[in-house]
Image 1 (tube, helix red, strand yellow):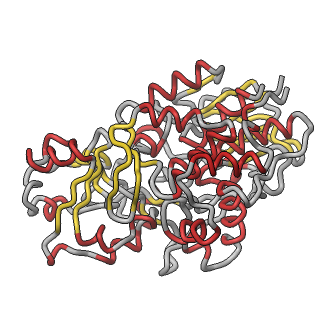
Image 2 (cartoon, rainbow, N blue to C red):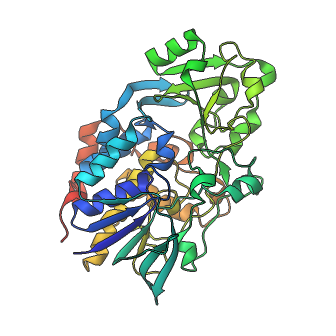
Image 3 (cartoon, rainbow, N blue to C red):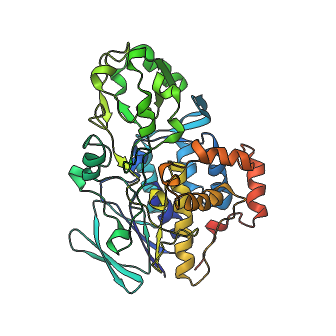
Length: 426
């Protein structure tokens, strides 16, 4: 049996592990913290704008298990908020244990609080990885889903310092890039002013610290929009966000909250003393990041050079997924790349040609488009998502964006890919 080692337990790593296990591999997943899902623990937004299309494409491809998991925990469905239509919000407080059970049910071995910190290779092949504790794990094929954030040094150097966010570097140490460990130079995303990296996208507020009227609106509709006084509007903050789909004037002019089980404040940071000047927020307290008034995590500091099968350039048996695979933002996007990386890692190990998803399908088009954009200076200063920014505009221009489920299924079927990613390879 093929032995696959997945390093990084965010949405991408979980999707890669699950897909690979279902098509026949023996999968071990390694996560440095005590929970899976990474930023998915504080996220919750999916099926908004082009993410609806992408979610249904994954279901048609046969790798929609994690989308179904999100659906099963939706607190709100088919909601609109500034710049976004037909969104669903999953319960971020409950998503991790359900995902963990799903992976275990499908045979994935989960290793938590296991930080992979060194790699052994033989020529152009990785043969094993080793944890901080000195435990060695062999494999036939490997996936780097270590992400691009989770480094206190980067947050200090390029941000506002460590805000003790969900990555919890002071507790579990910083992430380690597998590609960097094997001598492959990581690609760094840039801001428009030339500063490396970008701020992560949102903060959580403890619900019970909001006024009863705001809390009522939030829990009944899923969204609360509270106009800011003019002297508190800071449009310059928008350009710092990783999530370009929220870099709209409405997010500078208002407090926008989403109900993901937490009160999700759609801002990378907001000074607490200013926040408490706004009616209804007089007693507000941040839940994550704990220093949400100062800053948030810096992302896109370590992307891998790769081809459109998500194989890392320069190595025979290393694939990548999630933010590691490019300037790609979002849980849906991470799951999509993870599914492809997991499937192709097993295809490679089985001696078969890896799958390139065609550009007639949004998943395939994004993967190839982002790869080409990252070859340019301007491309490294943008971020790409199915839900906004330059890629969503491209989806609409190419006619790839639709909420017609039958049309999406027909598109996948015409490409000969219906349930392709769920069929056993071994």
